[in-house]
Image (tube, rainbow, N blue to C red; front, side):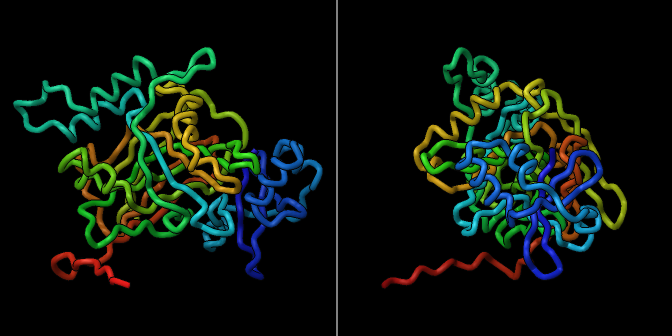
Length: 333
């Protein structure tokens, strides 16, 4: 089952569900967020609750996307209560990409970087087993709901950025119940948009490189994540494919188990506040930056994988630089 949200002609939102090609509005609920809380409080699964509510009018999701009416698949009433986070070095091919960004010189390529050490930790202990947590992964914060971008909208790179590059990933979508229990709605495609040039200066700049917008959706896959996911990431420029590469995800291609990644995020009390939404990205091994692609204003990122429905498409927008970076002024009260 896939879930999405659209904007109607009158400006109201509607929840859309589909299995296969036919999509329908879910009766009696205005948002996926409301539906999730309803399910948590009633103790019913999403599929069971939709079965009770029933469906109404048919929806052409592709047309809604073209018209800019396909929204983020979930958003709480206050965007500040949505957390965008992620973890890296989780996929079996991710170490070589990251390591190539952090070696100091040709002569130092044999040196073991901190990235390689972190990757080895995951290989050796990244799985939760027998109810016990495994090794904790790298973790980073990207922002709140004000940074979340739906399909069809621009990923805006700030004036101080040195780069704007895609990262095709799978994200877990979660809502926190009234008692602080995390509930997973499902999974969605994500573009964990990052500044790889800044990160390459020094790996300690990772946090700065990640504080950017991120896109996810347009649909949520409800249920378990397939063990093996095969997708495609591409960059379009002037109507032509500039770069295209397959990417893989799912636990068959990861050094960490999903339950271990979830544990090391939700073990923090601050991430178990009732009503909050979490979009947690699970990492990638595929980057155009690793192939020396330099993105430009107007480039289009497209991420697709069959189980997740429609592709995630976003245009890159660089805010113009007008000279040296202006100092952000803080006023004294």
